[in-house]
Structure formats: C-alpha cells, structure tokens
Image (cartoon, rainbow, N blue to C red; front, side, top):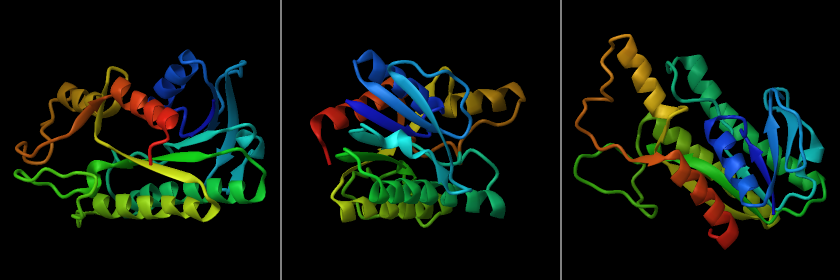
Length: 219
C-alpha cells in the first residue's frame, strides 16, 4: 500500500514512516521543510497551509492518508498561539479535501489524528469513544472542531477513521521530553494538580494502531 502522511516529519510521523516502510509499504510525506532525500520507499513533498500551497503530486498512487498535521499544543496558550493551534488543524484538512476534489486519486481512507483532550478531566469517570461528554476547555473545543472538520470527507465517499491519542511516550520527544526539560530546570513537573488520571501510550503502540486500522479498514 502507499501512504500519504501529513505532519510526517514530526515525532509520530517519523516513527510511523519507518514502521510502514519496514512492513513493505511506501510513504509520501507532506512537510514544510524538506530535509531528506527521496528513495524508492519514501518521498517528500512540500506544502504550506498558511499559504494554501501543496504539491499535488503527493497524492499520486496513494491508498491511505494519515493526517497528523497541527501546531503543537505544548506552548503558552496566548491568543495568537490558540488561533494557530486550531487554524493549523482545520486548514490542513481543508487543503487535503480540496486537493482530492480537484485531482484524480486512488485514496480509499483517511485516518485523522485527534486527542483525548476532548474528554473532561475526572477522577472517577472512565471515558470511551462513544462518550458524549466534551470538555468545556480550550483543548476540548479544539478537538471537537478538529473531528467535525474531518467528517467532510464523507462528502466525497472517503472512509474516515479518527484516532484519539493520549500522552505519547518516547525517548525522542513527546510529553516525557517536556517533563524532563522542566525537571532539568527544577520546575515543578506535575501536570495540573497531580491527582488526575493521565492516559498515556508508547509511540510504538500508537504507530501500530495506525497500521492496524489501515490494513483492517476500521472506521
């Protein structure tokens, strides 16, 4: 199979690309900064969501799109950063949608990243994918709009899978790296009040979820 990964040069995308290629698949990556050379299994294509530009060749021969694009939420939530966080997610989906509408393609499925930030913090309840509770926080609103935007692909008969991701643990980045940085500078690295539950996932388990969903056509 051939995959297109948006946000593919980030922590998750880099690991996911390796797992896909090692499994015998080929990968196209959409990125704002092309740093590496193409090879037979891995090709890089330029895009810029703020400028609404994308290399349309990125979608040629692709069967599955995995959307990981979006500005990091690990930043100070200033008014500017909040706007950038939500806009980057919505714009990336819009650009892929518009590209698929105007260019002939073989895409059958899009798997869009989401986040467990859609659920409220709670020390007693366990939330599942069919839970109706949505957090009234900034992050809850971002995820809610993000998922709603992803559903536009049903208009062009593309199967959609949404993966709500928890805190990703990796030696190379993610939440663990941020907490270790705080610890190095002797800041308190407790999240919130330190008592709430945190759903975490190892990066290898996460990328294998994407692979499993792709191969088994799970909506």
